[in-house]
Image 1 (tube, helix red, strand yellow):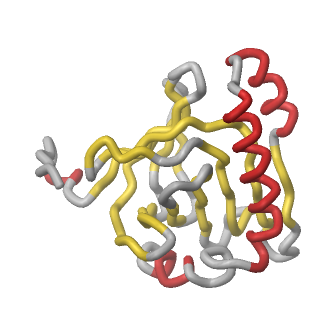
Image 2 (cartoon, rainbow, N blue to C red):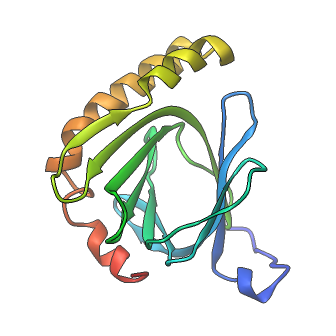
Length: 177
């Protein structure tokens, strides 16, 4: 594994997370803290007050702690949110996370999101209209369209019945809550 050089002391142990759109444009990005790895992938943590930014828009300060899971060989990234957040689980359908360096991960957001509502446990698919629009706008390949749809359908069932969605995330979330 290559060595990492940090410019500031507060970056030690942090990972730059960068979601891009299909045309390469910058989407959501933030610095998260590396928590560890398990059989599900790499876990990064974000305490209350973590700052996310979409492109060059004004930054957003998160009111609830969360952990994000970057799985290996999967078309998604999942965030597990502490109390106060509307969604207990928020899964971004995206290309497989690519680790350019140990402190930098990037992926292409392909619009669809699977969420599990806090309290009710209702599972919902979000942004289907955006997915359809961006297929035309960005010229998604058949592989991207099919891969995203298959992953979304699988996640709709898995988010209530399979790990890491049922309880595995709780120990990681406890590290930042």
